[in-house]
Amino acid sequence: MTGTRTTQGGDPRGPGASLLEELAERGLVADHTDRSALESRLDSPTPLYCGFDPTADSLHIGNLQSIMLLRRFQLAGHPPVALVGGATGMIGDPSGRSSERQFLDSEVLDANRAAIGAQLGTLLDFEGEAAATLVDNRDWTGSVGVLEFLRDVGKYVTVSTMLAKESVKGRMDRESGISFTEFSYMLLQANDFYVLHTDRGVDLQVAGSDQWGNITAGVDLIRRRTGDVAHGLTAPLIVRSDGSKFGKSEGENIWLSADRTSPYQMYQYLLNVPDDDVEDLLARLTTVPVPECREVGASHLAAPEKREGQRRLAREVVALIHGPEVVPVIEAAAAVWFGGSVLDAAADTLEMLAGETPSTSLAHDEVVGADPLELFCRTPLAKSKGEIRRNSSGYYLNQVGLAERDGGEAAAVTDRDLLHGRFLLLQRGRKARHLIVIEP
Image (tube, rainbow, N blue to C red; front, side, top):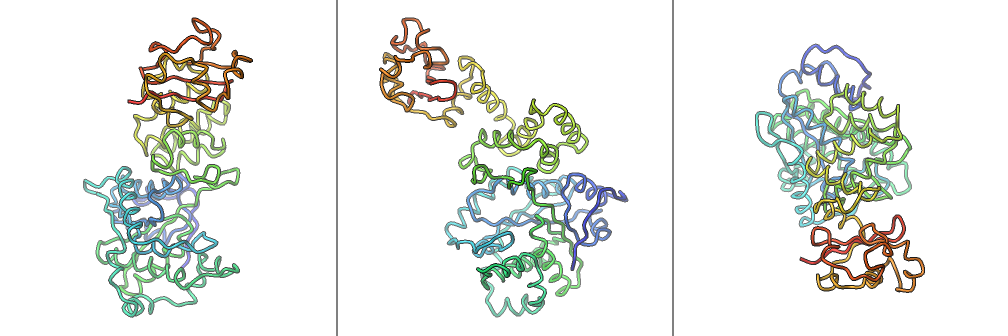
């Protein structure tokens, strides 16, 4: 089975056609099965699914496009099924990989599945008429024996078909090759589609374009075993206009978990995407209407130095993942570092900065009454008091030069210096900062 590359435009003959047209306008259609048949199926509520392998205890921002794809279908009245692959996660998908994944044990996979399920719960609606469902393919795969699997799945798929899939061909051409374990991944995912189709009425699988071969394997399996017509749709993988992989910063993933990537770090990552990516990412990753995405993109390119497009993108994505209430705090924290007054910063702003800049926790008595030069020497900002005295104009306490303080550079720290009774900002030059936090 081959996919059809979608072009812009289309005949909105019904809800299905309208939905597919919007997805195309957002840049979210790469391959799909028969367009007319898919449109007709989407004219009524259509259960669909997308799979996520629990290879870590968090999804990353590169997964957000697939999550939002499920959400867009849900908003159009189609109930989504989010599959967290406890079984396939034990093997690892060879798609887009140059080497085999490390195996994870059941305990780790269970913990990862629970964490990912919680993340999906904040982005999909698990109540209402088109309620989302969370499933684990280990529930129907774990007890299946090898002979049973070969009889019920393997007999319907030819080796030549599997070898023709890009996910397999790419690995076969490498010196490392592909193990039988990974080679079988396609069969497991095809069986997932079959089980969800027969048990839950799932007629559509969506994913990134690297999953097209796995999706069509499932479509074919359903047809061969039941005679039913199932559908598949993929979205293009996101590649930034500068050629770098979207979702990584200095080689590290931008995670959806605040414990792995703070909301502030995610905001700053999005604030620094290339100008040419703003409109595309806004359309793909947010619920901002398409015309508005285009307006934001055009306005941004007219004055890119203002970075308003990146700001809008960062606000929308961070609000989706971490809640809208965190955005003003992030922007207030960033403002302090880029010229704003720390004296005007709210307590929650300083709390956030304490997690984003080097900081030291000290007891109240260690700070109040202390010589500020000694406090500097307790941080990496200064090695000795003499070093500070040689150029005290370059050292600041709460953005005030030490020499400019009442009583001079050695005037003891008082409770009045403590911001919100807990914070003291030490600074050397324009960028080297250290936050002293009073222990509760």
